[in-house]
Image 1 (tube, rainbow, N blue to C red):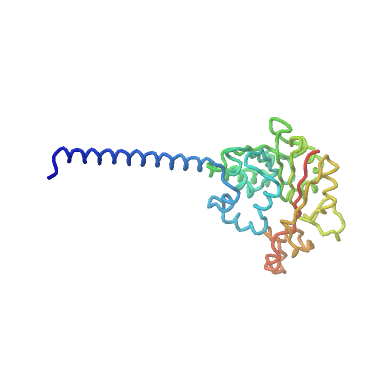
Image 2: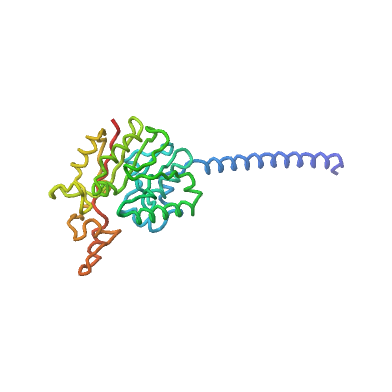
Length: 291
């Protein structure tokens, strides 16, 4: 027969065991919470951001033409960098750069000048307003983006010249060539970059068989000619990449590069599908460093 003392002893053992299991469960839950918090605070990878539902579907549709992962990796971006993007437009790359740099780095958007007197001042202002609205609608990703006006010679540079690790520009050089402001743009870029900082450039590539057009009137730029201009301005070419090449683009379209997607300025008597089949323009991808 089991005595009352033995029953009490067994009950105490069970109680002790339950306390032990409870303590272990609490400790395990605390470890899981700490791990989850650490994972939440860790910077997102480029792959995670590019695949994220936070990005617009219209943006993702262009990934096959713009190759954001390979392009940014080629430019050597890291999450702890201070990165400045010149004329980010509607924020296609901001959707990737802002969350990637949010925790450890800084993204500076050198956007259009709201007080511009340029011939395209109305477009500049509407584009800037749309960009600001985009950022305001998603503060979890965009709340730490610093916006400064950039329309050389009118600029509002970051507080400390020589403080930027990496400056990027995508499909803007032809605009500065058309305005004859590219020399001043390069001067400002060199001023903003730290010693040894990098300058990444993507733009529409003109075939070497075409005469060099210093004003890039059809949107295409001679790659070798451009490299010489940038080197003369105090930079060294680090590398070029075929990442954004498109051999289907002959660069001889009726309305220049704007005949191709995404603009698709196709003449009324032509089939737009022809240009959709070509895809977006053939582009050079160049990385320079400040001497």
